[in-house]
Image (cartoon, rainbow, N blue to C red; front, side):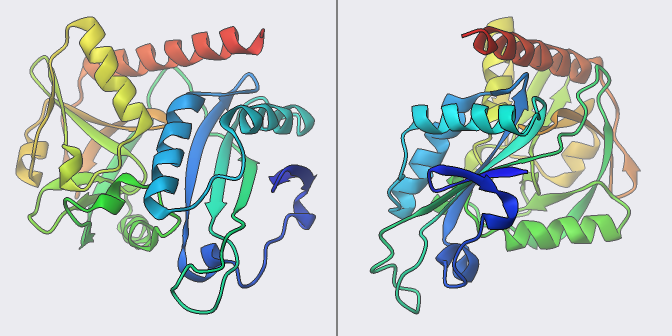
Length: 285
């Protein structure tokens, strides 16, 4: 497997970084996860904007342009013969002086790697959620960054898996639902969709934004609503959104069933169709 490392495609066994890299030492960096379809990294511009915004917040200078990295991502897919994959972009502040100060860490490390992708069939997977005991902060500026420091989410997912669930549902200290460990949450009430506001502690997901834009184009009411666990259990349906899996139906929370809705299938079908159009249109350029 070839990996992009600081401007070059190299065999994965040669794709190494320093033991003193700040991404390794402190989680001092960012990452993005994209779906690759037909050799095309989907929703590239939206992911790039989030990466660039996060880099500005963390004061890390992006070492390459968007156009260069997009071309390298496609070349990575071609040379690895993986037209369907998950692309991960990892940006680290790299090596600096010992301690928390970022002084001297002026040459960021950027890695892109490909990984197996979950299937995208017409029928949504059905997941069970477990409410995590850990809490995400609300109103935190770093919640908008997809930082390399995801220990809270790692522990939440481990807790969910130990409970026999597929993913963790994360609350903030006020008991409001924020997100899943690796996805945004939507729920259905009547003919309207709802999702937690970003102020609850949710990451501004690319697929979340796409679903909200689709709702607007279809005349479907979509609200950013604060919610607790009891309201979610009374919903007419619920689903998760992510760049890796698209739309995933939620069927249970803490071993209590959640109703299912045909709206989930409608959203998933629309999203997959949009992805297919983007992949086919871009692949011929």
